[in-house]
Length: 117
Image (cartoon, rainbow, N blue to C red; front, side, top):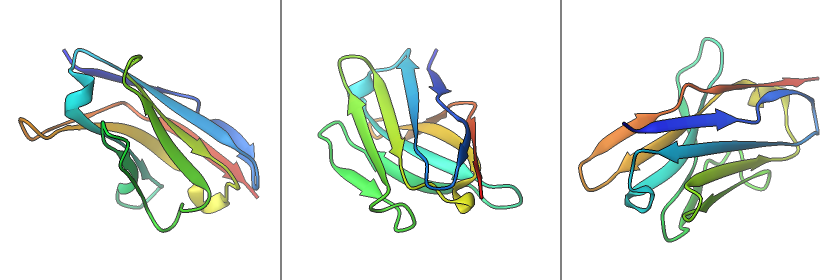
């Protein structure tokens, strides 16, 4: 059974930093593109960042220069380092695994990030 467990959310002041982590189990980690999505209150879920097993990275324009994504294929983890946080970054952040071999998506339960102004 695939499990994605996020950690690291919390309350931070604008301009601060947080590091989110996602631990994956029950899957062939390298077979998945790992990503982070977020959903703000009243808004649709949006893609924040993805990283392939070969460390090819995509970052949404809204977070470029502020967020970085990394993965450890030995530990089955993917991290999102967030810096220069803004109130508009407030959202529930979800870890995602996309298995390109079977075209399946897996989701964590999410972790709340709140950025105060």
